[in-house]
Length: 100
Image (cartoon, rainbow, N blue to C red; front, side, top):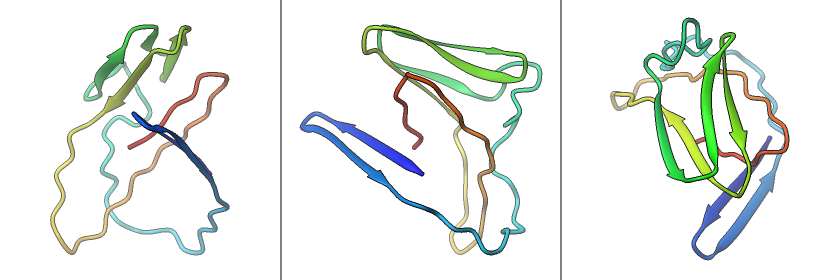
């Protein structure tokens, strides 16, 4: 797993191997993680110009050049002392990204 964090002061990166021994049997917080039928209930968060997000073929695609930034998110409500899971497949190419 590779995480890259961008801040006003620079960039930090961490690469770690994550071993999952048991699957968590808790409700999945992500709705429409398969992007079936489009982007509902995902919200596009434009940060700076140069990158676009499109939803097609049950996938979200980031395209563009020029160092722009954009993300997608869902507002999620959780209760203290409960276990939840977030299940999604993430793959990519030359565009740097992050998941919060």
